[in-house]
Length: 197
Image 1 (cartoon, rainbow, N blue to C red):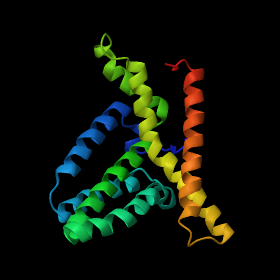
Image 2: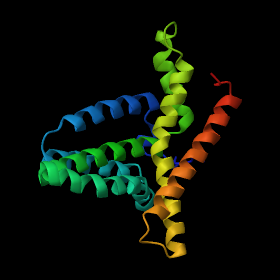
Image 3: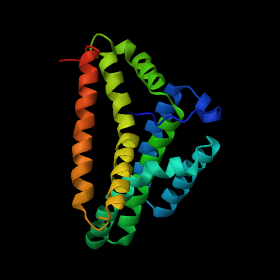
Image 4: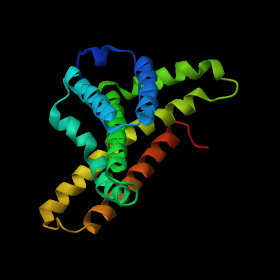
């Protein structure tokens, strides 16, 4: 259901999950604070080079960004209209960079490794925080990006096969329905594992 992991033996694959999560959090903060589009262009180039280092097939990497392109197709023109083209460009590059970073981590890290790393990191806070629950929420949140990308890709292919490529409703309704069905399935899986309250 959420098998976005791409097996490999690159430096990124061998880096411990805890280190990658820490770098992901720090990098997202840095990207969010970069003020100029050319700085974000450099950061985005570094992130994209990570896909080459990890030997992720270009088609797999591109699939992770499809949902972002749909969001940007709506948000960027509105941002340009009200705040100018440079603001729209900065927002678009910032969002694409953060999503690409999250995708790079999920493509090179198994969910079980992410879960274990989160639980180890939170264990010292055990009296106040349930490390198991926080770990499963973190793993599911990170996996939600490629999972949604897969749903949108499948719906777009189905829409094309039906010859309804101009219909926005033919994308929005199935994506929402499938996302809710997936959320139900994940909820049932969590209940089966004891996360029922």
